[in-house]
Image 1: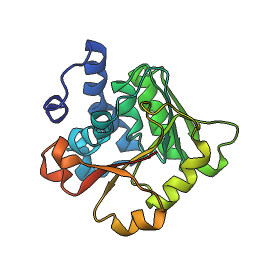
Image 2: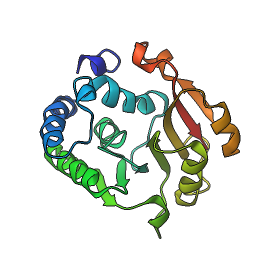
Image 3: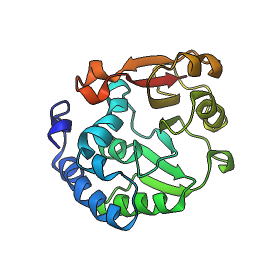
Length: 206
């Protein structure tokens, strides 16, 4: 938890309790359904929670915003962001049912009223639009944007986050070129100067 408190301090007692509960919950679920590698569970707060919160460090999500977490896996970045922004609505989806089972269990145990989940693929989401799509390196940017674009509401005011914000790592030049987008990129190491975040980025496509 120290990894998070090093960079964020303004939490309510309820938020603090929720963040602190994450490790126990993920350890418990991981014994039943392996969603986080054993090595990573020991560094949960840095490698999963703080990494997810890099999005909160670069984008202020206004109350009432509707956010889709695409390919949420074990609930990242959606669960940490839902704790951070309790008045923002998050819909967490993954094509692997057992992962969604973990996410539902964690969200219920934390009492997160602003989280809904679905065992589905992006292409199968119909009749629903979101202000913003977030994702953590589940696919190349080209695919992420192709899946996200039809699900994003159009005509958002310039100061309101819209489009896709994803967490990616490594040399992204070719991926960006193939996606045909002109994303805004923030190096996470500049936000959180820890070795783990070298060559990791927050990538935003409006």
